[in-house]
Image (cartoon, rainbow, N blue to C red; front, side, top):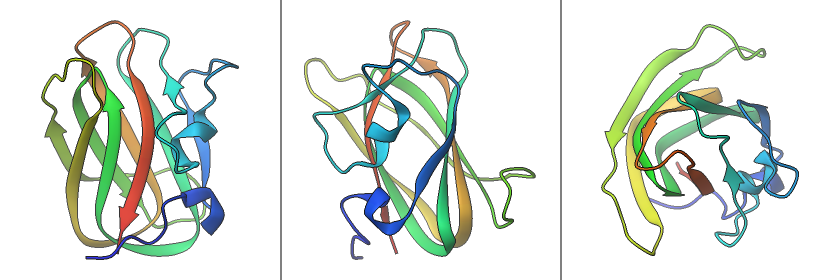
Length: 136
């Protein structure tokens, strides 16, 4: 399994939707490849963000580096607009004290133009997502 790239934004991927935004921690931080930068939620659930790819992309797994996320659902679509999603995976994340949660979630070689990440619950009112990386 090889990493496509440590930063999705260098591949032309974009965060096209985010449920909340803090100017100090914008959604674009999710795809910059740096775990020191992050996107932070506003404290209500569910929270979601959608990553759009420049073209349909084969994905075997995604790795999510986060903090205080309890349950994460992933959906995908293959259309040009971010609608009509289908479920592809979910994970209950373990609580980590003082360090990032790093979780690989298998997507079984699916093709997607958009991935929607839905944080249905957290270990705290606020959660942060530091990096999403994709394996093909």
